Length: 270
Image (cartoon, rainbow, N blue to C red; front, top):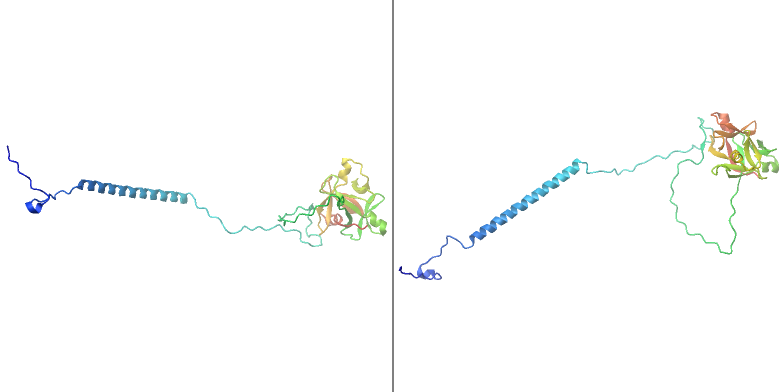
């Protein structure tokens, strides 16, 4: 049998001359593996960040290409309001046709809140009386003459005495055939209506024809503060004076017609 030699103790190499084998450090393989894993992790992170940046650049570029950025002008848009009548008291140089009154541009106004009105006591039975509008109709080209009822017909006459004032004063009410237009009644309850194209005062017979004959719609005239009155059932026909008789005639573009068909609705003379 081979002779077994005892191995010198390794914990005291300086005593027995034995030296450690330094050619291989314990745990070296594990360190290599850990380092390789760390390097691979870093490379993967860098690649992911680069890919995310590329996608962000592509999306922003696409947004720019597709017009994703929209700019709005900060300058206010201004509009010019339609202008009204010039306010001259003479006939317009170029005669214009009548137009419906009250059809100009409307302006929205914000109302200021008002405090609540006091409630009337239960014992009070008084009611406000409806307002009544009394009118006299004055000619524009004959300012001293007014509509005047004489023997059932309406003429254009100067005022003479209290009876003439009463016969030249009418109550202006809502149109019998159109509430946005006018009807006129005399002091004895008759209505002014056209019959055979002549204006006269008649009792209301309740017919549809009477209501239309007694309804006239206001239109702007060629004179400031003047009105033309158009028939409801004869559109394009206006009241005018001819030989100082109030008649219903078709509209025409002429200075005499514009003057004869323009009237001022003033406060009642009576």
